[in-house]
Length: 335
Image (cartoon, rainbow, N blue to C red; front, side):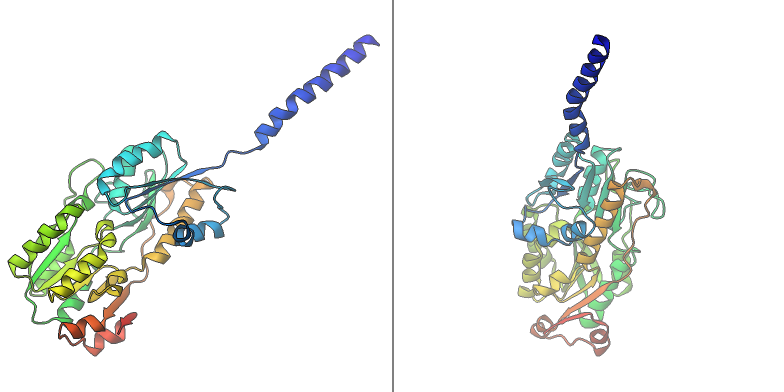
């Protein structure tokens, strides 16, 4: 009798002692998404309207409930991305989201194991981020900036049609935007340079890598006697789009860009992706990775649609006539 009571006591005690442990095990650890952004930290209301955050919520990833965020911002400096990437790796986040080639390269240099989802990278193979679009093969995948580098030359075709008299074309770009994961610049002959020559432009490159480079580059462009301006895709330029568009407008330079956002603030013409839907596409990659998919087996998404935007107000101020053929093809016309 005593032995039976003893066994019952031990069973009951074990159950009571094990209950807190079982409860703790039932509380599943929430996954953590690391944000590696070169931009300034946005206001809370703007953050919640981001296409990335909206799409994640649609997929069931609600901040604080099913997903935690570890956000890092370069606050306008791509030079800080390596340091910030190292911090995310040290905190053992589950996925890193990297907008732009410099953020993607910084993340890939910091880790070969944590999954990385990028946005807006034009040359992911050449930069060593992936082995191929169909089978990335490493810990990186995402949404490319264009399906083919030849798209880069398309905006110059529009520029040539709108400004047929322009001869000297100043092209601003960010050299570090095509650096490789291994280090050093990727060996790439950008089609935009070839297209400029084929279209009859005398093309000269003016590199800009940081905020302090803008004014010296602008002065050099004017000293050279530029008659038109071409602006490559870059997170640095996106942050300074108003500044660039105003420089072109003030100095009567017909300008061509990669995003319609530049045209909305006074640029002349753009041809490229609409970043909002592609931002949302990256959320689907994050969702799949968090649910167990391997990034190396997720094909990199290629844009299927490009947007043409024209600012007729700017064209009129510069004394340019936009051909009807371009207006018919334009997705956005600002009057």
